[in-house]
Length: 266
Ligand SMILES: [Zn+2]
Image (cartoon, protein in one colour):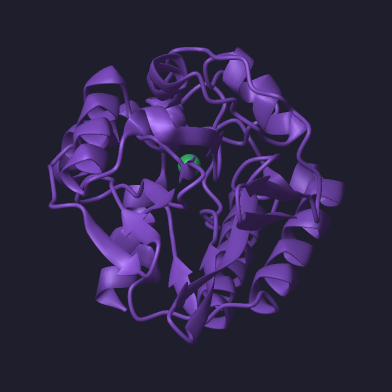
């Protein structure tokens, strides 16, 4: 629980917090998570590579160009080539998960495919007025993503198939991705589930956005029901020892607390 609370504190995408979290830029040895699914991020921020002989999919590139270069080096260390990345995806468009995507897209020529809401945020370099953290979330290199991902979209690269599950709440266009990785006859349903925790700038009140809150609650139901033998999260420590169900429950609890504190403040 203590670990989860620390993780919650780490989740707010405030620039000041980036300085408070050296693990966000600290290198870590890239490694296989399971079969063709690899971890190529930093110690504190995920970047996930799913490989195939016909090309790879990369989800999330944290922070900035320097971290993007670190991710590229990690991919090479594992024996793969960044140039073989055919598609770049994203959990949510805050700098700690998307700030390095512009460089990867440029270096690989791979398209970036996101929800329309995330594409809008990326074009603004993370300064999206519809984001609960607008005004406080740090800016990053703007980029043009194809905003063509909707709930249930299946993207493919060679034999790879990843399914999008739209999970608004932490940001309007947040997305969970699920896929199946197999090692011989042993297969696992892998879920890379977006950040679920309610954080906002001081001026934003969730209670002033009832439709958004109700979409947020559906996100928790959706995440709890995902095919999820193995949970991966954008902040790796948030998913450690958790299941999709327990991770969704922690997100729901945080939202309830946030709404209660808004009531009190009023
Ligand atoms: Zn975030």
